Image (tube, rainbow, N blue to C red; front, side):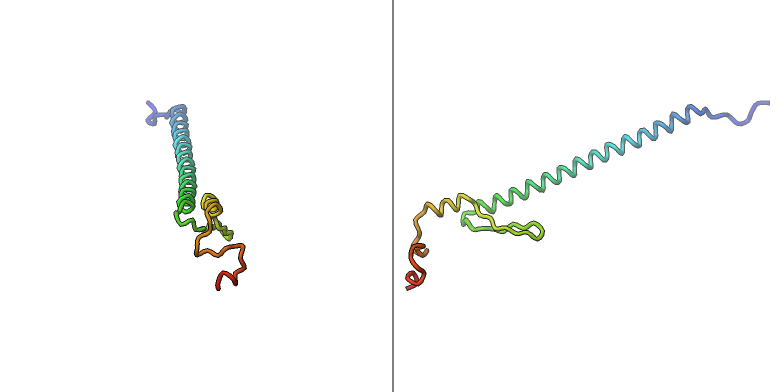
Length: 107
């Protein structure tokens, strides 16, 4: 009488399990690498956007100062070229002369 149950080769089961586990870890590793790369790209894009926005504010024709915040910290920034231009230009008629006392200017 022949055995009604066929024996399943242990080696084939082990090989299939090993292939499944190796495939899973390979896919997971590639997935995590892709997530990390996209996170780094997002951080770089954010930094570039922030610097570009600062440059637009600094290159404003009015040469006004602007505020930059980071958490609780705040600073006022202005383009150095605007400051240099203000130093080299003679004072306009509507600006008081720094040499004179303020009470003489208002009279």
